[in-house]
Image (cartoon, rainbow, N blue to C red):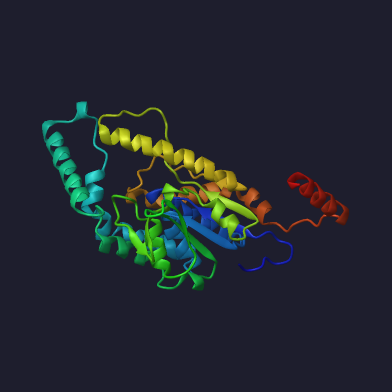
Length: 316
């Protein structure tokens, strides 16, 4: 961990998971970069690991915007699994042809899930990660970086702090069922959102004295219609994810919440909209960001002693 200049706090950035909603992270980074707010460590989960790893590896926000534009216009944005998962109109509003199409899309998804470790081909998955993330080791990033994944074998959080940056990012965003797990050493790793949706605790654990979290999780408004088992399962997962994100936010000094919660996690068509919303929300919180990054005020020696003795009494 680099030392902060003078008495300034070490500021850590925790970028949460949320699929394509996570492109809002780029807008937040744009404001932080333009305002010259020094970031001492970045921790990322899932899409937060993709954007955070790319930025820590040396890509500026302008380069990241260009990367997003390229991926949106590429054939990868038209993968069959994304097309098959697009929300359909309510059953009562669908004609016969629509219902037949929905049936076959469902059968295709089921077949993919039954015979493959992920519904997205591992090579396509790797291509997307490689498009954003430089081919370096985590130890070589310009800003210290940590990727958060979940180990299927041990059933616990895995914080990746060394080795291939690309492999760590792939592990962090390997959504179970959609992307194949990533094996690193004796671990079989999947999306870190299972265990740490917004890794504020990781940034603090690795030396951050002030933590800014960026939450791009899904909104869970009550005005939803549950037509089938998939809708019910998805709703249950959203509720669990939201409660986990709220718990993770307890480790943050500031949580930035871009209004992207209604976006589908695979909706690449709204990527630029997400970036703009992240930027807007960061400007909205700029004074709080500046305050967190401002130099620490020196306390009188008597106050320091008083705080020390109070802590000693608390833990005696």
